[in-house]
Length: 344
Image (cartoon, rainbow, N blue to C red; front, side, top):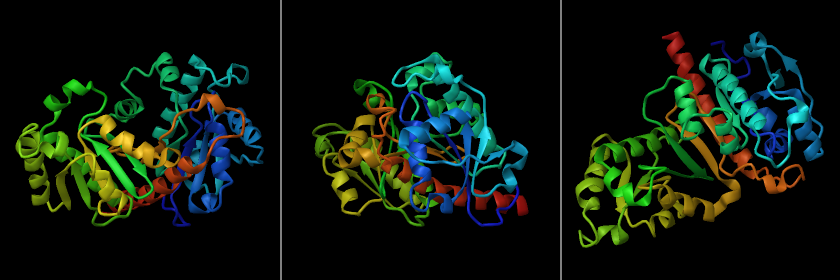
């Protein structure tokens, strides 16, 4: 991988589903204060999608074309053109196979660039899962799709971030009645280690991690269940033995108060909504999703494609700006690690 003469990372940005607010969001991001100074940016996708986004946002974006071979010497803002969707097939606020197809093809290209070291991270505007599924996603979600595409079989999980607070979970898209049987010492340990390593990649050298309980009142000494005694506490102790700064299990109705007060940088929850409800209540419009554990940094705003306001210049740039800022920090660490390996 070529070194960056300007010392800043290179980020690939893709438009997400063209039927939603993605292209508009990216146009607004590029015009936000300090963005193009923080990273060299390669827009990956069809030219008409980027021009449509700029038109929707009533902004002027200059597209500087380049080829794949020119990326490693690129600086500033550039455009790697693709031909993935006909302009007439873009239907605002509609789930379409064409929208899912362009989402997947642009994602594949961005992942190729990241895996080859031509870029240091990938930022994607919101996808529509139904559209991607109709176009051949063939995975539980885009995170599983990315892991498969990158041929990565290690532990990975979606991580949610709000400002300086991060949360990840031990179980994800399963029924609530199956949660207790699917938590384990190994699973909790992996989730804690992932939160710890992700925060360190984002620049926090000694993150504090709080682990949520499963049962009310953290089980009340076994009165409401023994998962805290038999599974969660032993996992926490194992993580402490590995010098991770972790505490718990904390009752789930108070653990996010600790994080809000700044007493924890991350909360590890036992199931999906245990963390998602708290994060979205605290700041839905600023939430970020990180593809934790993958071999390349990937981030996106946590909200969806917002078909109800697509094409109306109403999209709020806050979440994608938060995603961009976090990705830049992670991309710097990723780039430095790759350079160290290359020079070893």
